[in-house]
Length: 516
Image (cartoon, rainbow, N blue to C red):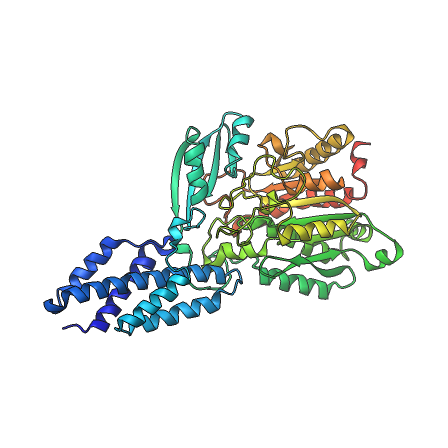
């Protein structure tokens, strides 16, 4: 004979494995599994108690499922520092008590308490809930008009002739099925639910990619450089992320020159607007190291550091970047980690700048990977960039590192027109010159597709800063290797971009020199 509390425990264990082991974060309750489990347990229980036992076990199963659902839901809230830890502990305490009580009144009381806490709100009913699944879409887009239409729903990862590729979350996949069905050629499901662990395994890259910098490693290395090369560097914080991380930056400029000159012409380098683009952190980190280590060895480097004010922020979206590798598994995460109003996470930082915000190539739906945010500059990361530019009027050039496709992009991105005049000639001349060294394709950003609210349109449109986007290697990819090409590619990409970056630092003195 199986005692009733033991039956409760067995049944609750089955509920847990159904909730966690099969669906993981999809969090659905399948009554068929429950009745199958009930059948095997009830067979070993006295028949005269069958009615009460049936009710009791079903109740235990529902309660256990609800508790686990709530626990996972609260865990997600806890990850964004929204006081979820206390709620999480409360739910597990309630669960433990539930498993050891047979008194109906206590059970009813717990039902009331948990119901009042919102336990019976199923996560799978929320269209914005991220199940962890990703989909690789291949779409037919015969021209820029088609690409721009598609970009209102999806980010286009790469373009190959008349085909475009996009890795999307579950929400964007449903949007694509609804609005872009005539463009979809093929779909590959990337089931990443196993990549969403219930506990924090720490922030380290998957095996083989440990050379990429974690947030802590970026901070540690910049601090060490600031200490070792104090005559030409100054550590600074650009601001803070959603979860309160400092956004680490470093200034490279001869302190002697800064004393002698009221202001030096400046340039600003920024990486990792998008979480999954980890290579965009490595290139600025390697350039920082190369510049400071060669100041006393290379006359050209010394001349640049003595006459320029150089700023690097290698990892703007630290929260998103570290979430993308949590559990040592990549998640194709793009946005930051803001908790949105309907329960989803993240805003696309490169759609959140105010110039031309929301005029195309972005989404108003918070579940989308290209969610523009509830308003321009809604995110602390983009506010930090704006505040920095506002307080550094000497910035003449900005370079934003992204991946991938091997492109050099310049405004406009949010509209089809050119900037015109001599500024157009400056953009074209500089992009074409740099392309000779890194073999990237130079082009106006909107020639790919229209995307509004991005960094470069804002920097040039509101401040007149000559802004470029480097879409780093690989050139194109229809799979995971696009965003996650492996650590073996780092040196190749760095070497290809040394001359272009030094060229930008040099021309920050007066960009118009390139057309004289």
